[in-house]
Length: 267
Length: 273
Image 1 (cartoon, chains in turn blue, green):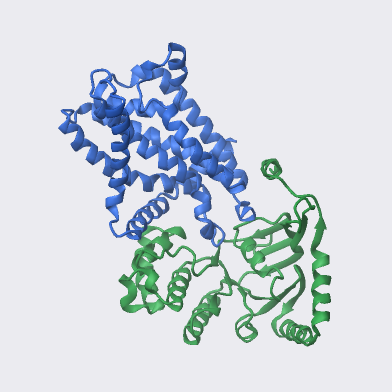
Image 2: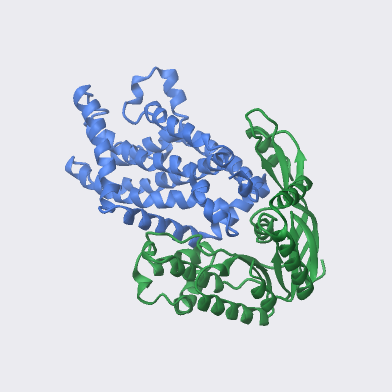
């Protein structure tokens, strides 16, 4: 197992330029695919945000959360979800999408999840810029606390790569895995306190919810934007997050390692 | 392993699965390659011959290290690369960007890509199309671009699978000349082709694979002659006899077995090593 982790880490770190190039040209090719290109990277999340804001903010008339107007509070969490969600769904497809490459050349397959996540990172940065402007309109200006975002972004990257390691290999064995994950994503969105406040849950469920790794990242983003409580305030979530992530990573790398020369047979 | 040997195969087999004709019927296993034994010297240029479906491409991906044989082993001594022409080219990107992308896919460093760029552009002869998206290229141009990038790799063992059957004669000749240069530098080359004339012209030895099994491996002219004879013999058979011959070859490659489920696949892979 340790051998597998070492192998995957080595393969990823010795191929940084390869990961960067694949991610860069993936973004570029996606942009050239449509006439408006980059515009859709922004339009999609904006429209989704408007939908949720209309339903929850206007129709259900959600009250301000912790003294923060619902729309700003929601945006602070959603920006993170818009990064994690495509990472999980596309990460699952990471190997299958590159089938024509891995069957035709000797290729370090374990870097593929990372390439997907880094290509999504570009969209995330674009969204962050827009969000900064929006939050400034709401009176939340960038401050020193925002540096914490770098840490939480790193958490999101490590978590989604670890998860994609596993799901992308399973997806090669049976394509149903991707279908399942697509279906589960909606569930995950509503199961995670992104659109609603965790305090609406009974205490015991709150405790369980704190172990949700996605919630840790979302809450971390919100902490940087609004609460400013610092990393240590979330130490319970933090511990469970890193335990889950490391377990996923070890499991994912073991799968990657065992299957590395067998992908061709699974097409 | 002897340091003069580039590739050594011992009882190597590759097995594929066939689905049953009807639902519920037991699936079968099929030897794509069966019990191969051979060794290739360093600096040797081997032509691989064989009729369609006899396992030539399977051997190329095993030699390239893309997949492992299911039984036995194939040892490869040195870095190897499969010349894959159209893979890794992105339709939306320009020729220039594709050079950078494919270079990176093949594992070249940034400085190495900068270094080979001029050579690739020169060799591919795509001229002003360099800054056009690849989707506007003709198929010949695409393969020229892909092939040129591949040639700039510097592997010790090169595997060329039907790479020259695209593009016009002039370009094919140019590629042959370039590969001859590489051959003279002492590289080991595995050349898979249906073009007997090219094989005779280019290779030192020939390997004839028929029905997944190694039929002959030896001097280029002898093997080529006998292969040509066999092809003629096969073509002169009547339709019925041809089918008989095919069935005979197929029967040798089959193993009866039950179909593997998702979990069987998972556990089979986890058990290895």
